[in-house]
Image (cartoon, rainbow, N blue to C red):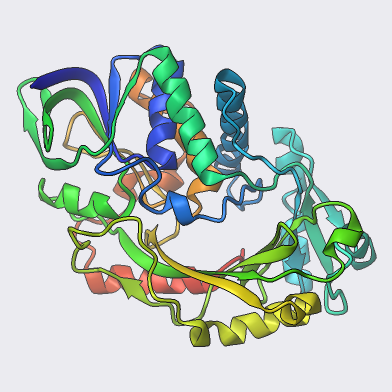
Length: 405
C-alpha cells in the first residue's frame, strides 16, 4: 500500500515526536512518523531526562526554554504525565573566569524572561546542603528547570499529535529513501510512503539513511555512562528534592533520583560505538558498563558530594548517544536536496528536543526559521570532513563536558 503525506518524520524518539507534534499543532496534520521499533527505542528510553536553561548561546537557550514549555503543553492536552520535576539546577564555578562567564549571561536571561541568578558559596549550601563548597567561587542558578520522564514526554507529544490528526507508525522500518517526482519515496517494511518532505530524526541511524543519498553527515555514537546510587542518608530528611548539579570540574551532572543520586559522567578518553555502522539487530539495548574508566571523574564527584560515595552504586547504565563534532545538533535543511530536513545529533535531546521540534516545524512550514540559529545549521560542516577528523573533534567536545571556555 502506498501512502501520500505532506511530511514524513523518520525516528520515534523525543526529537522525532516533537517535530510531528510541532507540525500538527501548527496546522499540518497530513503528516506521519515512521519508527522501526517502538517510540523511545533509540537513545530516549535510557536518557536521564535532564532539562536546563543554561547555555552560552542565547538562541539555544530559547530551544531549552521551549522544550519544557512544549512538554507541559502536551501533558495538558493529553492528560499524559511528562513527569516534570522543577528542582532547578546549579552550574558550579571554581575559578573567577568561570564566574565572570556566568555573570556575563545575566542580561541574556533577563531578556528571555528566565529566572537566573548567581549564588555565593554560602547561598548554594542552603540550596544543596550536601555540596562541598570550599573551592567554589560562585554558582549559576536556574530555579525553574529540572528534569522530565523522557518516555512520558515522548508519548505525550505523540498522543497530542495523533489527537490533532497526525499518524504514528511503529514497527515500520524505513529501508530506502530516494527522491521522486512527487518529493520523496520511502520504502518501508509495511509499504511505500510518498512525502513532499522528510525529516531524518533517527539519531545515530540518521547517518546511514543519509549515506543512501551520498551524504556524509558527521554523526557518530559515543558510549555514555550513568551511575545510580543506593539510598543516600539524609536525603529524605531534607524534605525537598535537591537541584541538579553540573560540575565542570568533574565533569558530570548529578541529580536526585528518588532517595539516591543519578550521575552522568563525561569521562576523559571516551569510547565510540558502531562507527562503521549500526548493527541491524540493535534493539533497546545497553552496552556493557566499564566502571573502571569512570573512576577519576567519580572521585571528583565524591569530593563534591561526599554522601555520593557513602551510598554505594546500585546501577551502572552505558548507552550510546549521538554526537556531532561541535556538540550542537544538525537541525535544518540539506542544501541541494529539496524537502530533506535533519533533526539529529542531539547530545542533550531531552533538554532541547521539544523546542527543536517546534523550531524545525516552523521552518518547514514557512520556508524560513522563526529566528536565526546558525549554530545548528547542517551546512556548517564540510561534506568532505573525514571520519577520523570528525571523531577527534567529537572526543574533544565530549571531554570538555560543562566547560564554557
